[in-house]
Image (tube, rainbow, N blue to C red; front, side, top):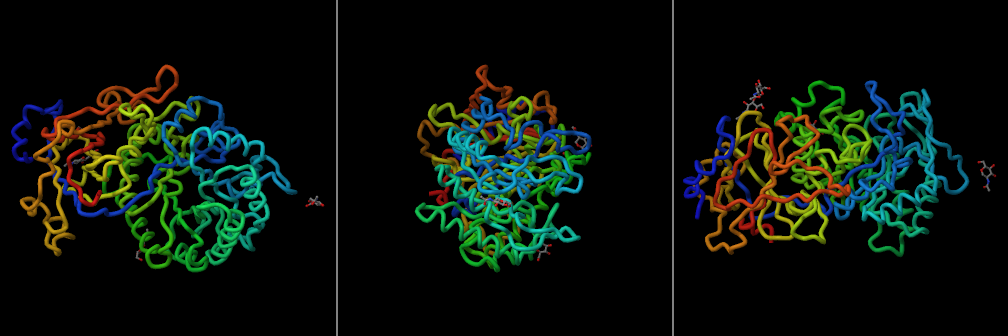
Length: 547
Ligand SMILES: *[C@@H]1O[C@H](CO)[C@@H](O)[C@H](O)[C@H]1NC(C)=O
Ligand SMILES: *[C@@H]1O[C@H](CO)[C@@H](O)[C@H](O)[C@H]1NC(C)=O
Ligand SMILES: *[C@@H]1O[C@H](CO)[C@@H](O)[C@H](O)[C@H]1NC(C)=O
Ligand SMILES: CC(=O)N[C@H]1CO[C@H](CO)[C@@H](O)[C@@H]1O
C-alpha cells in the first residue's frame, strides 16, 4: 500500500486542526547510507562551578547548583540522571580555570567575589572530600564524566587579557593521580574553558596551548598506562575560531587531541527580548551550520584522528533567558541543535546545564524537570528494565540525510535505536500552519547526480521514489509510534509540556513519569500541528544504510 492510496483516509483522520492552514510537506530520506554517526551516548549535560553570587541582569539564577554545593542526596537529581542510562556529564565552565585541587602542597581557598578577578571571582578550591562525594554520586547514577582541567594554572596575564607562560601541570597531575588511586572512572579529561581565539575572560595563544595539551596527553598516557581504553583528551572547550583550532591540531600533533570541543551560544545574550523570534526563525537557526561545517573541514584536513563534540551549549549566554530557556519554546532550539549537530558528525552534545541558571534541564530550586529535560529523557514502559532517553532510546547513532521542501518544518532522520526502521524528529516552527507530511525513501540512484545537490528540483523526482510502507508487514508493524509534544494551554512559554495531550510531571514518589507513545495506524497520514514537535518511529521504513 502506497501513500497515494492512504490519501483517501486523509479527511477521515483529520485531527483538531481544521481551523488552521494545512500545508503539505514532502520529506525525502536517503536511506542508502549513513550520512553521519553519533556516539551511543550522544546526550550530555553540564554541571558548572558558579557560586550563588553569579548574577546577571539583576538575577541570580544559580542557587546551590555548583559542583561545590549541589545537593547530591536530592532524590530528584539522582532519578533524573539515572533515567538516562549513562548520562554524560561535563564538569566545567568559566571558573574551571581558577580551580585549585586540594591535593599536594598548594594554597586552596574558596571562591569569593573579587572585582579584579577573572569573571569577578577569586581563585577557588575543590577539596578531595567533595571530589570523593561527587564520584560516589557519579558511580551511583551511572554518569559518564568529562572533567575540565584548569588550563591557566601557572600562567600570568598580560595587559590585554592574554595569558602567557607555560601551563604548570603539577596540580592537575596530582589530582589525576589521586583520582586514579581512588578508582574513580573519568571518561575524558578536557583542557581549559573558553580560552580559544580571542577568549571570553582570558585567552591563550594556540601555539602555547598546543604544547600544553600535548603535555596533558603525556600525563594521561603515563598515568593510565595499564588502562584500556584510556580516557580521551578533549580541547579546547571554547568558541570556534578556524585559525586557532587548526593551529592547535597542527602544533599538538597526531593522536593528541582526541576530541575538539566547541561551545554554542548562538541566540545571543539571555536578556535579549528577541530570543523567541530567533528560536522560531529557521533561517536564524541554520546560521550555525557554517560553524559546524568549518569545524568538520578542519578535522578532515588538519586532524583526521579527532572528532567533534559540542562541549557546552546553552543557547543564550549569561545564564540563559528567563521564561524562555526554561520553557517549552526553548526545545525548538534545543532539539534542532541536537539534530543539526548530529548531521555534522558531532559525537556528543552537552547541554548547559543539567542544573543551574535559567537554561537548566532541572529547575534549580525544586530539581523538578523543565520541558527540555523530557525531550531527551524518558522511561520506556515496554521494557521496564531499560531506563532510557527519548532521543537516546529512539534516535540511533546512524544519521540519515533528509530533505524537506518546507523551511518551517525542520526534520531529522536517524536509524531507529535497537530496532529496524527509521525514527523521525519533526519540528514545526510555523505558528499557523499544520503540515500533512509525505515521507518518502529515496536511494542515491534515484536521483541523477547533478540533481542531488539541487533541492529545488527534488519534487520532480518523486515518481522515482519508493514507498516506505511495506506490503507484507507483520502484525506488530502495522503501527507507528508517535510522541507528540505540545505546550500546556498552547502557551509556548509554559513550563509544562504535554506528551500526546497529557501533562508530564514527576510521579508522587519523585520518579520520572512513563512517556508512552501513541500507536498510530501506519497507513494514516502524518500530521504535525503548528508550534509542536513529534518523534515518529517508523518500523517498516526500508533503510539499507541502517543495517
Ligand atoms: C609547601 O609550600 C610552601 C610554600 O609554597 C613551602 O614553603 C613549604 O616548604 C612546602 N612544604 C612542603 C612539605 O613541600
Ligand atoms: C567558515 O569558513 C569560511 C571560509 O573560510 C569563512 O568565510 C567563514 O567566515 C567561516 N565561518 C565560521 C563561522 O567559521
Ligand atoms: C504568527 O506569527 C506572526 C509573526 O510573528 C504574527 O503576525 C501572526 O499573528 C501569528 N499568527 C497566529 C495565528 O498566532
Ligand atoms: C508556510 C508557513 O506556514 N509559513 C509561516 C510559518 O510561520 C511563520 C511564523 O511563525 C509565518 O510567518 C509563515 O508565514
